[in-house]
Image 1: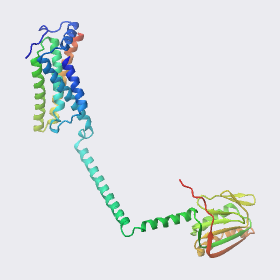
Image 2 (image 1 turned 135 degrees about the horizontal axis):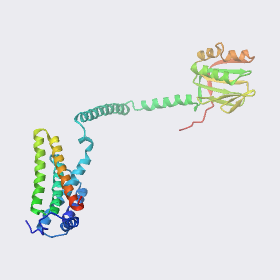
Image 3 (image 1 turned 180 degrees about the vertical axis):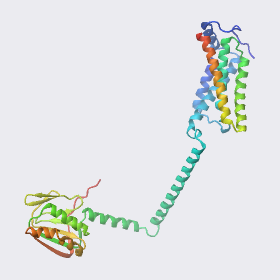
Image 4 (image 1 turned 60 degrees about the vertical axis):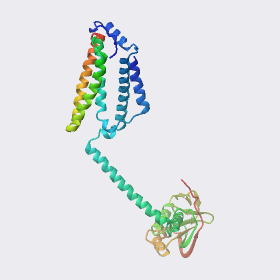
Length: 110
Length: 244
């Protein structure tokens, strides 16, 4: 409940403060957001699987974001940045779909 | 990290169990873990909003291909060049107007206004011209033909009058036949009538005397036409100035 409140406050802050994303961060931010979402859905799934561990969640959240950003950074250096971003987004989206499917099976048995 | 009140370490067996676990996880708990996760979620929400707003801010150009961007840049450069040229022209105009010749613009504008007033018939006019006295039957068609001939011959101002009425002929003047008389823009005129024309008399007179012209038409119908050349024809009738 409190984390959900935190999410809400974050959204409100973002809307009110209207931050400008620094230029160097622009290619990585969307990827990092998708990676973070993957970690969040994974956490819900693990709660239902009975294997949720807060330490693992925090670490996986941070490492997901970092690794995703690093892959895109590497791609940028190699000159295939946009393709790499696409690849990362595809993989993370598939993971999100898999996690949501697992959650759905638990909740609806379908 | 922290003491987590973990559910049994096994997958949820029923939907009810699953819903219970989700509810349980959402229950407010004050612990270090919860605050860390809250912090992470706060940053996540902030970042998502920032990323979305950033994306909306410059979708127009960031999704554009390089060649299109080059085109956009080209167009802007051309537009700038055009605007610069316009600026130079306008500054030159300003210089001229501010310079020693400062009444020249005003004078030329006044001259133009005076010339337009003569053509529009809103001002009285005097000058060299001819006076035509017509007696006999005169139809609106032949009068209109005569007016056209006079205009073609360079007539500046034309006035048609009988004993009591004077009508200035302008672009919007109309002619109609009325049993035994002529209606010109609503005014009924009876022969004999007089037409005053300002213009070059040596050009205007032959224009009326051509075969099939005004003189020919009137005299063949038994009327008389008398053309007098004068250096001082005065036309006093005017049409009201309409604005808009």
